[in-house]
Amino acid sequence: MTGVVQKVQFDKADAVFAYLTDAKSAASAVTSIPLPAAAQAVATYSIASVTAGAHQTDARLFVAFVMSPAAQTVLASLAFGSPPPS
Image (cartoon, rainbow, N blue to C red; front, side):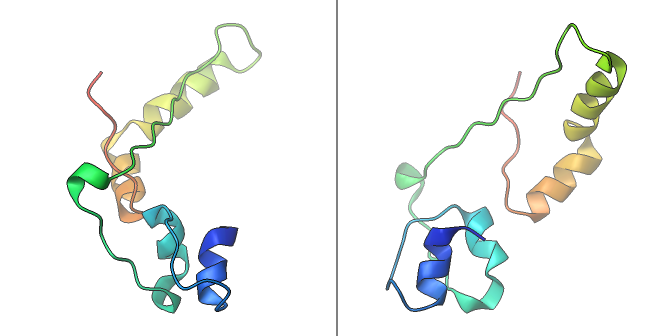
């Protein structure tokens, strides 16, 4: 849980802006209020494997797994959005 969500949880703040993934970690201790689509923050997380390294095959397999439907289902259950089209 991030510090900003903890501030609300422990009555150190009345309201904060936080990622939904952080608010979900506080479960029922905080209330999330959705913002309108125009006010949504978009975070982009890149993933890649290096071309020179001792574990290139493992790295490529990991990237493939993260992008797989099974991993995307897990990420969606944690409030992460779908990756943008490539």
